Image (cartoon, rainbow over all chains, first blue to last red; front, side, top):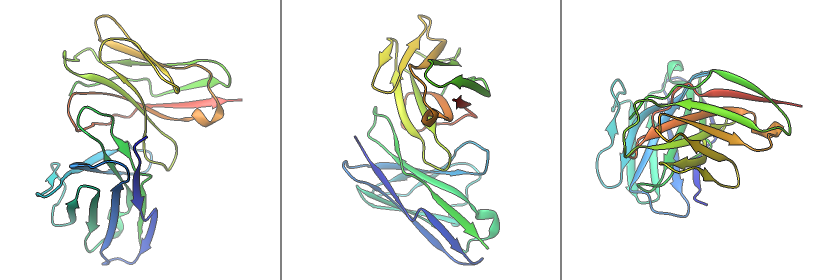
Length: 114
Length: 108
């Protein structure tokens, strides 16, 4: 079946650092990918829709200058958390899929900012 | 997308069938019912989806009522590895909106 790969699986870094997370669709071309954030014991919250070749669409309340999304190819989207602070610590998850097909999710990136 | 309502939690006995209900009374005609699950510290996993007819695959069965206002996910023989949060989502486009889901605990 379709596979979505996310890297890295875990990041621990100092406050003020920028962190890049990659999301790859391994066996299909994804014109659209999605980025979610999940806090402990909470459900997934959609942050943004990543569109290949165009600007990402952010959900209300998500700062686009804080969470930079680049979708430069049909198989890769990246999320960069800029100048990360402890409150940005969370579980970040991406998904991809074709329209009218189930979304497939990466295994997530656990980000810890010290 | 239509809102869904699921029980907060449920326990199941290993080896028995697990029946997970979901209410979606405001579902519209072109919206599908999707089920995903999330095992602790992993990304969600697709289970099954349907529009009107009942569906079955290697993981589960999905029973949708005739009026489409509710559905039931059936795990035929629950195992300890089926312990997870199960999400019922109704949508007809790309974006998925996750509710709180049902925390299913399978006990030996």
